[in-house]
Image (cartoon, rainbow, N blue to C red; front, side):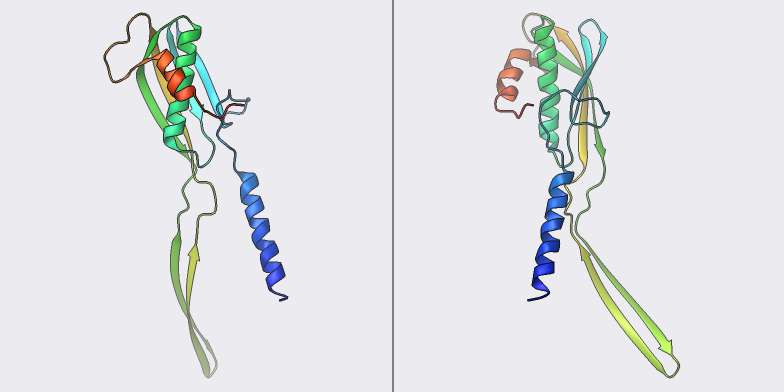
Length: 169
């Protein structure tokens, strides 16, 4: 019974630390720090922007891509455009995924007339949230009918479909 209480306390402390270390990925503007969760944009010229969305550790890549599209759509509508086309895109993954590991070790020692041999087995499991993903897209805005192109998006449709139900702060 004496071992059970400290073991439970240590386990709970570990879970609390892991929960505190993660940043939820919500749709919002970055608050200032370069690796902060959220979107940022840079106007390259009239009707052309570079939009970046930085996700928190463990966020799904599809969610990050959707949020970058959503911000591009909002900018297009704000500036009086109807659609946008992705001219360039890049994805950056920071951190690393510490998946399960198994290791085996062995050793021997000699003490005068005595000797011993030992074998060990170790495991580790990923308790962290995983790598952080950011997506940057360069977009060109347009007016009128949306071109029939796989990289062209109707801004109103993106806001309606991607923007619905998102977590926003």
